[in-house]
Image 1 (cartoon, helix red, strand yellow):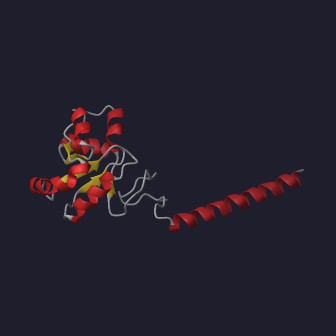
Image 2 (cartoon, rainbow, N blue to C red):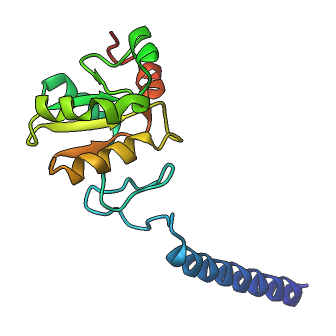
Image 3 (spheres, rainbow, N blue to C red):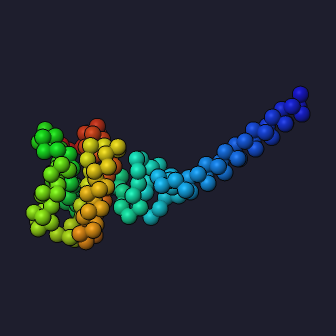
Length: 161
């Protein structure tokens, strides 16, 4: 009996080890790979959605602190109607559906030194990454993305206008 348990335990350990090795190798070649270590403020420990290498992602604590202190401007990419119904206190609306038409005016009004935090509906919305990359291309140095979006803001009972 003891030999059977020992043999089964050994097989189980071998299977677990091989599964780990295959996972690590697969992860290394996958475009949406999961980071094993926290990387210099670029990625949270547990990824949510797809992460873009050249963007900075921040958590709700930083978003709330920077917005309430006036250090950063929140850019809400939801539609104008959604924004009018309710939005994060102090946020500016740049509707994704119209952003290309509004960019020239926006670039004229916002300094390239200003800190901007982009967000949209929620975790599965990729609009914030696309627009944030555009701002990086336009030489805006302080650009960040908050993946959780307005629904999480509202769920956390943070200030709404």
